Length: 84
View 1 (tube, rainbow, N blue to C red):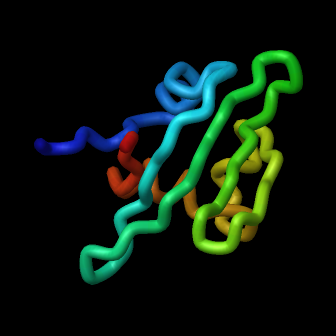
View 2 (cartoon, one colour; view 1 turned 60 degrees about the vertical axis):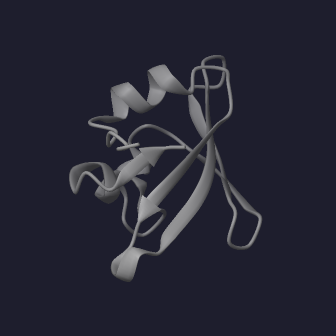
């Protein structure tokens, strides 16, 4: 089954609105970085669990595009973020 990439931060917010969802970022050589993402409407932040090391992040919709903090924004631009 072909997976459709997430197209925007707005789509990511809609999919994860008060509900955790599993995502993968496609990396080089067919490797994936798995993440659990939830958009908290009340707090207006993304709550992210990085499966590689079980670290957690709490980022605003603006911070999600900051390459210093996460690769999620860049992955959306490159059509490399997928809902699992």
